[in-house]
Image (tube, rainbow, N blue to C red; front, side):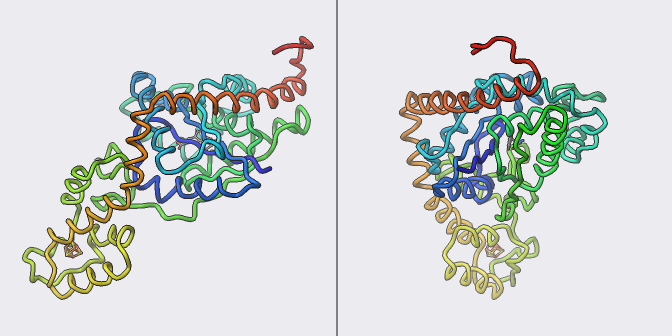
Length: 337
Ligand code: TRP
Ligand code: SF4
């Protein structure tokens, strides 16, 4: 069995960018009987830059879990667990912190970019916890002897850092840890409704899996269209329009062809074009919304799934911990739990 590990920080609900990216990869991976996938809801990592907002993290643990279940992550095939409830990962983080230098963490391109973006939280001096989150992520991965880590490009430096820690650990304490490989997502990153390369809550340009029909319509109405098109009979350029960009993701090919042709010929009104798109997005997300509604009405089921998943994850992490402690000569008591 191949252990596969992925995760998300629970800082907000998941959006269609996640859907076309990580979620579809995970859905495919859980169908391969040779895979043993784990998904962690990284609440401890979320706290590294949201330590002053524990409510937000707490609330989103459940939201993200509901999102997973609604898109079809199947708890019988994929183990979903809460990071903080597997304290072995915190313990490993402490052990690994001896194997990584501050300079190396500061050079990590992902961390570097994030620190620059988070001046508002950290001011001129970043916290020890945030700077060290790659170490904690290495603990997440290695605690499960994760072999494959399917992630977006931005996470690659974190996996590389994890690989370095594994090599260092193994060279000092013996061959115990498994060196993971990043599997880069082949799906492309979805742009925001405003044309921004990134979709996100802070940018206000995302459609969430949980959005209602009305919310979707309202958001699509605000999407950026061809700025040179003022009247309906102005000839348009769908290549610079976010509405046509989303039609390509959500509408049947025939409709897409029609949209582009009519737009170029000045025979299509933007309002009608947007309404048609909103309907197609809404129809595509409908089964997800319906499943979400079910889970919202059966929260005890969600909590049970998280509890069971966490129990299973902890068992796996404990086995790794035993090997790690033995290798590090920290195995003091025979029957230590
Ligand atoms: N850093 C990841 C993100 O921001 C979340 C994460 C935490 C993760 N631990 C992980 C991803 C381990 C893959 C493997 O999305
Ligand atoms: Fe965009 Fe449609 Fe308007 Fe063309 S008609 S500019 S594709 S919204």
